[in-house]
Length: 79
Image (cartoon, rainbow, N blue to C red; front, top):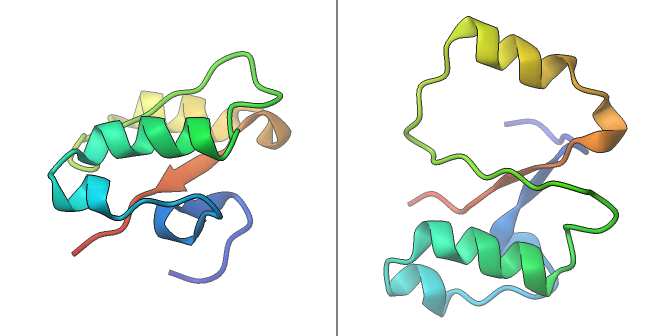
């Protein structure tokens, strides 16, 4: 994946705890790191999707059509 400014890699965040992943708490890890790194500011809502979700074209189009300044995508480490 090339460098993108709309994608955050969880393991590169300033406050990252790898032990959460080692314990198998992948989705919980996303929530904890969003909170600890204050990524929820200044947004009214934060959404998290699991890596194995398959989105149909209508949903993908809706997400892509959102105003970019109101959207932050985060990606967890993959092994």
